[in-house]
Image (cartoon, rainbow, N blue to C red; front, side):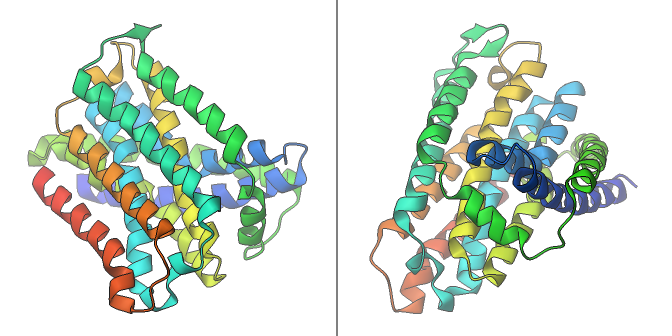
Length: 321
C-alpha cells in the first residue's frame, strides 16, 4: 500500500507541477512582475516547489537525510535528464548548437555552489546564525550575485516555451497557480511521508530514498520542460532550464535549514550525501567540457561525455543502494 501511495503521489506532483509552471509563466508575462529577475524567480520557484514541499515535510517528520538528499539528488537527476536526452538524440548534437557564453556562467556557478556544500560536509562546520548554517548564507549571497550578473536570456526562453501551450488570462493564471501550488504541497508531503515509511519498511537508507527515488519523482517536471524545448529545437532553453533549476534548488536548502530547528541541517546528516554532492560536481564539470570543446562530427565521440554521466549516475545509485 505504501508503494502505491508513493507512486500516486509522484504522479500527482508531476501533473500539478507542470500546470504550476504553465500558470507561473503566464503570470510573469502578463503582470507587473514580468521583469527578468522576478519572472525567472517565479518560474524557478514553480518548477522547484515539489522539491521544497517534499523537503519541508521531511524536516517536519525529522528526517533530514530525505530533506537534503531530495535537493542534491534532484540536481543530479536533472543533469541525468540532459545527458540522457543528449545521448538518445545524439545525432542532433545539442551542445554543438548551444551558445557557451550564455550557459557557461550558470554551470560554473553550480559547481561553486555545490563546492560550498561539499566543504561544509567535509569540514563538518558547526558555525551557525539563528540556528542556520553559515554555508547557507554564503549560498544565498552567491545566488544574488549570480542573478544580477547572468540572468539575461531566461525570459526570452520561457516565452518560447509558453507558446507551445494554451494561454490564459491573468486572473485565471493566478487562481490556477494557487490551486496547483496547494496540490503540489499536499502531494509532495505525501511523497515525503511515504518515502520515509518505505525507508523504514525496506531497510533502504533515507539518503538513498531521498537522493534517488524522491528526487527522481520531483524532477520529472524538468524532464517535461526539456522535452518541450527539444520539440522546439531550442536546445539552449533545455540546458538553461536545468542549470537554472539546479541553482534554485540549492537555495531551497537554506529554506529547509530555516525550518530545521535542531541546528544546521547539514550537521544532522549521515555520511552518504557527500558522494552525491561530488557526483553533481563531476557531472557539471562534464557539462562545462561539453560547452567548451570544439564541435564533434563523429556521433560516438560527441555523445561520450553524456554517456559517461549516465554511467556515473547509475554507479552511484548502485553504491548507495
